[in-house]
Amino acid sequence: MKISLKKSSFKSVRDHTLIVPVYQQNSKMVLPKEAEALKKILDNVKKDSTFKGDIRQSILLRYLAAAKGQNVLFVGFGKKERLNIASLREALIHAAAELSQIKVPSFTFHLGTIDMANKPNPADLVQICAESLALPIYRFTKFKTEKKPDGSTKEITLCVLTNIELTEGKKGLNKANILIEACNLVRDLVNTPSNGLRPPQYADLAGDIGKKAGLKVKIFNEKELEKEGFGALLAVNRGSEEPARFVVLEHNAGRQELDTICLVGKGITFDSGGISLKPSEPMETMKCDMAGSAMVLGLMQIVSKLNLPLHIVGFMPLTDNMPSGRATVPGDIVKSYSGKTIEILNTDAEGRLILADALAYADKNYHPKLIIDFATLTGACVIALGEAGSGIMGTDQKSMDRLKELAEFSGDKIWQLPLWDEYLEEFKSPIADIRNIGQTRGAGSSKGGLFLQTFISDKTPWVHFDIAGSAFISKTTHRYYPKGATAACVRLMSEFLIDWVEV
Ligand code: BES
Ligand code: ZN
Ligand code: ZN
Image (cartoon, rainbow, N blue to C red; front, side, top):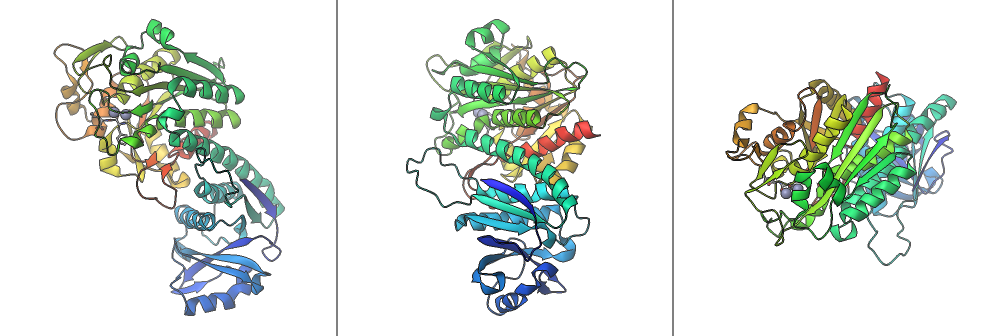
C-alpha cells in the first residue's frame, strides 16, 4: 500500500473516492468551503438519511456528477469547535475502515478541508492523517492459500494547498511510513501462530531484520544462556521441545557520548501456562504473548531508520511456556541472572521470570539512563483496563508524565497503575530470595510490576508497560481496527524516543 502527498486544489483532485468531512455547526451539517459544490448533495442526504455528521458516521455516494463522476464518502467530523487530534484520528480511522471494507482501490483526502482550531503543523498533520488512514487497512493474509487479488485499498493520496505544506508534509509522511511499516511488522509477528514462529526461527528473523536495518545483532543460544546464568529464562524453557533464545539488537553501538536507553520485551511465543496449565477456551490467544518482544523489534527498526542520535539497545528473551515431564513444576527454585533465587509457585507467571533475567542483564551490562519493558504480563491488567489501553508503572515519574502527554498525540491510551511496596511483603519466600507470585488476590498488575522492579538497580530509572489487553483484540473489532494484533504503543514509544533527543 502506497501513500502519496500532492499539492493540489480541492477542485482538481481526481481519484476513485474522495473523503469529504462534514462538520456540525449550530446544530446544522456544513461542508468545508472547498467542497461547497457538494452542498446540494448534502442537502439531499439531510432529507433522506440517518447521517448526522457525528464522529464515526459516514455515508458513501457513488458516481456523483457534482464530483466529476467520483465517489464521495461524507465523513462525520462532529462539532466544529470540538475537533482535536483525537477526534480527527477517530473520524479518519472510521473512514479508512469503511473504505477498506467495501474494497475501494484508492482514495484521496484533502488536508485543506480540515477546519480546526490549533491545527497541528503540516508535518504533524500529514503524519496523523497518514497513520489514521493506513493502519485500519491492514489485513493478515499470510496463511490464506488463495492469492487472488483481494481488492483491498492499494493507494492513499493526501493533498495540501501550498509548497511549504508539501515540503514540510513530506517529512511527516516519511516518518509515518516508517512507523506504519513497523506497526504492520509487529502485527504480522503477533498474529503469526506459535507453529509459524518458534523461538529459534523468530530469533533468526529478528537478527535478519536487525542487520538489514543496520543494527548490531547478538543472539544467545541455549549453551550461551546456560553459561551466562539465565536461570529464570531457562526454567521457563525446560518443558519445551524448542530451545530458548535471547536477542540483543543495538543501535549506535559503541557511541559512548550518546544516552543509552534499553528496551526489553516479553517474548513468550506461546503461553500454555506450563504445569500450571491455563484453561483451554481462551488459550489460542496466547500466541500474542510475544507482543512485547515484537514491539522491541519494531522500535529498533524505527530508531535505526530515523537515525536517532541515541544509543538504544533492544532485548528479546524468547521461549514458549509448555508443560512436559521435564517442565519446571510449582515449588521449584531457580537462580536468576541477577544471582537472586526465585521460588516458582505458579509456572503461568512466566513472563516476569524471563523479564527478570533480561532486565538484570540490560541493567548490569549497559548502565542505561532508562529501561523500558513491554509485556503481556497480567490478566489483571485486562480486567482493569480492557483491550482499549495499556497499563504503565515504574520508578521514573518524569518519563511516565511525558508518555501521558505524548499519548494524546499518538492516540495510544495508557493509564498509570501504582507500585505500592506494601505488596512486596507477599513475595517473601521462606526458602528462596523471592517468590514469583503474591499471596492474596488483587492488584495483580502492580504485583507483577513490583516483582520486576526487584531485578533492576534502584538507581536505574524504569518504566513498565503491561500490554496484556491492548496488544491483541480477541473477540470484537475495536475502534475499527481489525481483530488480532494492534501494535499498541509502538507509535507512542517512537514519539517518546524522538522527543528525548528533541528537548
Ligand atoms: N500471558 C499471561 C497474561 C495475559 C493474560 C496476557 C491475558 C494476555 C491476555 C501471563 O503469563 C499470565 O498468565 N499471568 C498470570 C499471572 C498470575 C499467575 C500471577 C495471570 O495474569 O493470571
Ligand atoms: Zn502465563
Ligand atoms: Zn504469559
